[in-house]
Image (cartoon, rainbow, N blue to C red; front, side, top):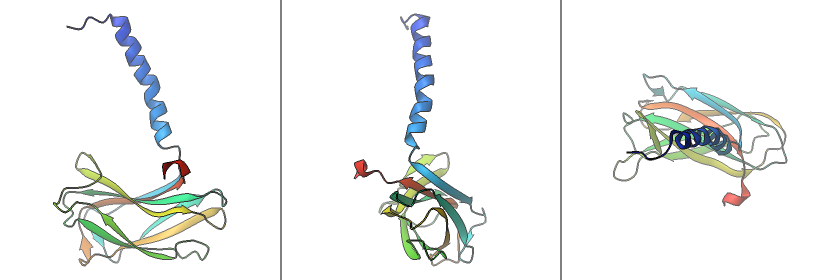
Length: 167
């Protein structure tokens, strides 16, 4: 039996209702720009290039560029190889090969789970600067042996202000 008066319970609910939005906003305040693409449910073909863009507002600021992946348990491998390139000659990343580890050695999925989806991330660039403010476009193709891979639901890029206190 709950001995708390109804007024105390209402104060607790009000407190949670007021603090929750602050917590959610504080968790994502360092994201400057992001772009996401859903992938076809039939699979991601090796010939399908995903194009993602981020907007860099300040060329004097250091940023972290993070690749976000969401997949289901129908994905057949523990990692995902990606080829990332930029056609922009001013971009610090002209071409890179990225390995995303999606499962551990025992086959347990890494990252967070929401329903049937697992989410994870790979920091591609840490504490990088861009020579000028503006939009930077990245082209991503998978580098797996199968020409079509199943189970990758979507892919995204997030540009965050580099936090020197988290190192």
